[in-house]
Image (cartoon, rainbow, N blue to C red; front, side, top):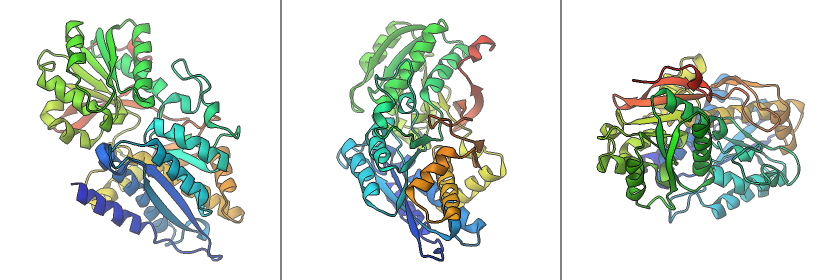
Length: 422
């Protein structure tokens, strides 16, 4: 599987170099940075594939001509440690600096992990390079919030200007929406576990804050210091406290699959205790990592900031899904939709800059920052003054018949009118 994924990644990167040169011969580069090895390899490779597919589709729609006649090359970088397999701050900083030092680099797509974004954002900000994330959801990257750290987001903007944008929705919406959904599922007592990282701990705090506000009883909260940490002690606490739901703030490589597997092994699912997790662990790769679809079915719930690729119904979404499967021979990861959308925004910005003359970092950034909106795989959306998606929303999924299924729109206020599950 790992070898196949690597081959698909290489093929995708080769496809990305098929652009037709502009009359003046200008070539620009778009860098991507997220894990391409380790526990989230499948997610990262799928995201790179999607970025390349967005460029391929653009070329198909423009008779082989790149945006404004410019040749676009994609440089896919891995920010995961070869030792731990998890994102690494030193590597992420090196990746961002590599883009800065490459005069042809006009856009930096990344990161996957919110903690990694804290590292690269100041680097791209000082250089005046647009950074677009397909996945970061920690609210403090773009604005202050009740659970954010002091000084955020200004500490990531040394120039004082906004250069970072994200197409996914934020945790200060997702966490509360998940808590309200839990109430609608009939849950009254919850136990919370997180991975101590910016994303995992952040969304767990948002879930906890809103759960308390709407009357759910939080019977306990703890953290796992590493992906290898044994969660059984925490699960014993959850069981003793009468929890009906364990909420886990994790990504694939930070302990989430291990918690689900332990809940199965220790009989919590047999006791009727469910697991709910955020977008960071909703991936086809989760099925294999927990030991099979049977473990997830009927026992788990997940939130994600869009419809999943196979459930997209508009023309752009269907084209993406069908061409992805045909090109790469496998299902796209849910976050590939956002990677594709990030590249759509980037190509639109390059095209607009080319129409005004030479494609420069400043011109690309200015277009993304000042544009009234974009149309593509996510429909119509724009970025607000903070760099957040103005049309982002969340869906809740259960797991049925081997797939994440039965999407329902979830919001922080849905508990006010929903009928709790019997």
